[in-house]
Length: 372
Image 1 (tube, rainbow, N blue to C red):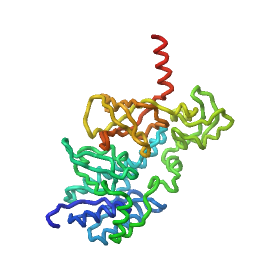
Image 2: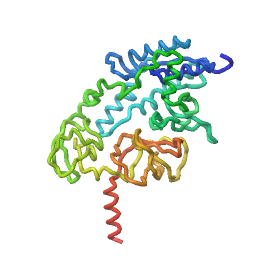
Image 3: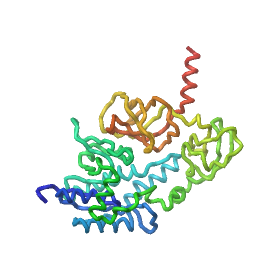
Image 4: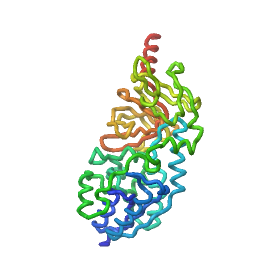
């Protein structure tokens, strides 16, 4: 192929991965399409991926552009690394991000090894992120199209993986990707984007968690910050930090929100919106894409759809980090991720273990001031 190397294209059956494979083929690379079957396709829903119709769509595109295509059964690996982890996280009162786990434990781990076994010099995906070469090697940057950027979900990518990965769509707008798919006549050109969690039928994640972890569905009390019982619930798996609806509470002076989930005591702790703000948080299992052992200032994202905010990150010897926010952020939930940015570059990120309420930090500061 004009002397160009072999590249494995991860094909999920959607328009983005289809265009990725087609672009590489058009550029003269020896492209091999690989689709992972991650869960049984007995239940299909609009926007799902990695099963049934999507595998067929990937195969059809591969035939159309003239590349070999393989379907690999990764169901057992996906179940253990993603689905069971998802249920365990909810059982602990956390709010997990299965897409990060899928990239970290399956797509950028096992699939990377498979690509090497196929003699490929790189693995390409349809993610909207940019990979650039800096003084220290490959760097991960946010996509040119900020509305499609997926860098938050790739914070756990290691430097070794980033050296091997390629992201052909990183500089493109989504509208241009669809236009190119239509120009090439790809069958996935008008296919809807994937929505929600791929392995959860009809979005009812609580039913899946209850099936895998029945202990997470035990009923308990809804209490305020002082421990006063305000009501009862049918399981902490139905709640997340910041949630207002579904509490079944009325007659309060002001709206109440979920502040914390106490899995050990099956308690949902609620309070006013003012108590949702957090000034700092503790992270575990931090992944660094710009190695440092000193505190530094940067921007951080605590949810995928929120804009970055100013913060100071303090690395810890246990592999975690403390993050001090310049201003309080609402509804910081354990189990979510905090990702560090310097401009568009991803410096790393970690899993949120806990957050300190801004009101508590203010009270502590006032007490110290009074003693002084």
